[in-house]
Length: 287
Image (cartoon, rainbow, N blue to C red):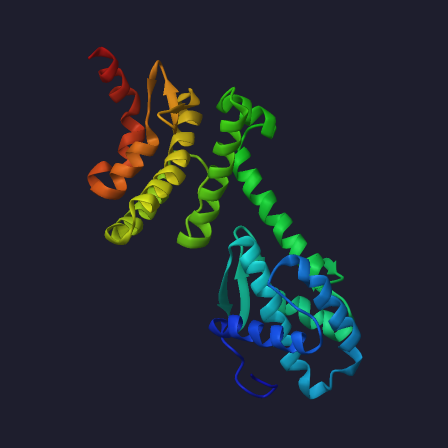
């Protein structure tokens, strides 16, 4: 553990530092499990010890609490640590979290600052980050639709299926950004980002189980299908248990197409599939 004047811990040490803090808290009769519900316990401990922490130990407590708060946020949002000029930050999507700034403020003055927002506790900060991530995901999925109700109605008359499509779409956007650094927005251009993701996933394909391939096919197939639906029209339906987009009496089968892309490679290009989908469906109908 570093003290002031020593080299600061790296982002790779954050999980270990959080684990150290968990042990420190356990010694004080506080059991932590990395869930947001435990943060009020951290705040209570912090408030009780703030005046007792010697100045030479403040850096240690800042790192401990930064690591724990960051790990709670990371697990809650699916985010990841990254280094910003030696400062541990969290990428949580369309917003970057700075747990160190909050913890430092809480320890020194009892109040953390994020931009122009005053933060009263680690719990409040975690809730703010989670809320901002939800706003980002919901806003991206909503796009130009005036409300979530309008979007769901345009998707399908099956409320349960509409909920599945919305949830899968949000997960695709989140995974694309946090895992692959790709920003998706349901435009045809965003399929180029999906193609890059497919290329990376295809390299993993020999090690993937059939169940994993099926889950990936559904996740990205729903996103591709929603891009098709928003551009060409149509509605979602369940076909043989899989979400599918009905267009002109035919089905686009985006989940099946993504599976072919994962297994078959770049010859199953998704951007080409999108641009030629109406022609392909028309030829199927005439057969």
